[in-house]
Image (tube, rainbow, N blue to C red; front, side, top):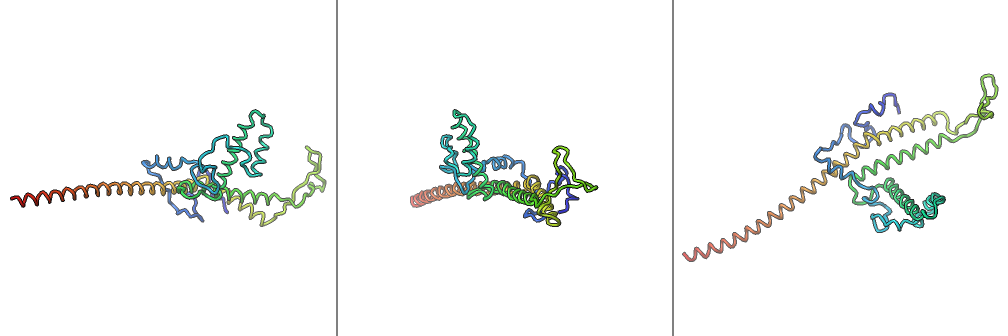
Length: 267
């Protein structure tokens, strides 16, 4: 990917480069000022407690009381990590610290599941978008780490010689300098390095303009849905009120007709 014409982050246009993206070019999804309080409410959510996921807290999405946070609740891998952190905690502080660490481990595990798999049923578009952006970033970061690991694989180490053919000694260690011969070489190495640059660019867009637009697009969809539901509810209430008035008027008309009939017969 040619980065020669890519502006520095502080110089980038607000609208992201949407090449290869599902985002339509030129859309900004600006939020109307009058809708900003509703947008703020939509954004104010806890990704674990306010969304469903493949794993739920004991008793649903409600936070359990602190005394329920025991290391036995965790998987063996998570348990080992918490026990390692507890190793040097004074006995008098252990219960409180254990509760805190187990809570943090459970919360982070639930958060990771939602980032990887997305929120469950009933999530708003805003929640889906925010967790979706985090999931895309997570996948890109994993790919970058994998490539960096591949590029770091060394096939062998060769001694370094100077132009005179003499071994080069490291003055700090007094040992022969050596250089790594990586497993991946040539065009494949260059291709992977280019891919890392592409990933870094995609992450920058997710952290910046593209992520912002995706989030605001979702917020607008939620605002439109909420307003539509409110309008439908208002119409339903108005229709019920009008129906009550129609029925009331029909009763009045029926009684009036009866009175009129009696009056006509008495004339």
